[in-house]
Length: 357
Ligand SMILES: Nc1ncnc2c1ncn2[C@@H]1O[C@H](COP(=O)(O)OP(=O)(O)OP(=O)(O)O)[C@@H](O)[C@H]1O
Image 1 (cartoon, rainbow, N blue to C red):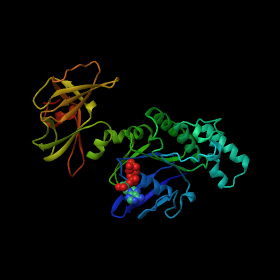
Image 2: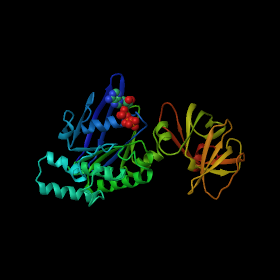
Image 3: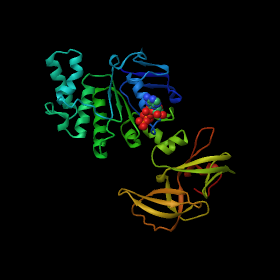
Image 4: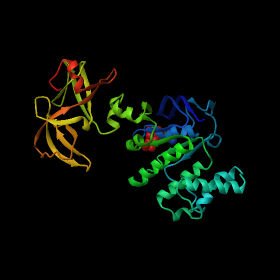
């Protein structure tokens, strides 16, 4: 069992609040991604879990044992850093065996464990090479093997594949997910790549300005963002400034049914917009078509010039300057205070306004 419990964890560096009183439980065997923009506190939180940083306030417990004051080597954790930091004069075998030698394990056991973990990361037969004789991706696999060989209960990864090209990054992150599930270990993965987080996480913790914005399953975070920040940060989103009045939100000439009054933000996913006949309050002008192969995105302009992106079928062809009608199937309205309100076109009839249905 390896559960991590953070209670009121905070960290300040001088006047900078890197983390603000954070409570979080990471369950046994879970892979949790810490996702957020640069400077949001992801690495600081990970380093606190690993014991590389001391919190200014709060406590951290692993399997019910308080480890707040313990150094990294006395925690059941292992960290994989962004830069592989392998010892260049040591072979792959030597690099991986190092931690086991420190623990004074018998030679035969060290050899067996190194072989097993090399196999696990797809590098069987590479033990005799020097790091300089490996590709970047292979070096990062060695770094991963070096962390896994000590059989940690909790694997901590700080943007481990950031320096690799996208193709390799995707392959390695899927492998990490696979290995983590096979070994049944708990993992915390720092990334600022939303695709990465959506692809591999059991749960995502979205951070901004040292605060947890939302914690949830990938699909939940995508479909039901709790704040305008999360809505804009995860997945493609049209975010428009609008005004609520008379059962509608008006934003950049677009009008949709919504309750409440006063300023608000209107969030619409590009895939939740379809083309239709132009009409008052639901028209735009095509700027350009962006062909992604599997689908097409129409970059359009609303009445005041604000961009509106529409994801559509690649069979659809429109020309720059063309006026198009839009039908919005789902939208979310965020106000300063209060919960976000989500709407769908087929629920509109209950909003006494059938114009957009
Ligand atoms: N040792 C330090 N001394 C002073 N300020 C620090 C230190 N480490 C981090 N910070 C500050 O704390 C905040 C959070 O930093 P952190 O590295 O945790 O962010 P991050 O989300 O991991 O960012 P990135 O994606 O850029 O790595 C930032 O404002 C950063 O400048």
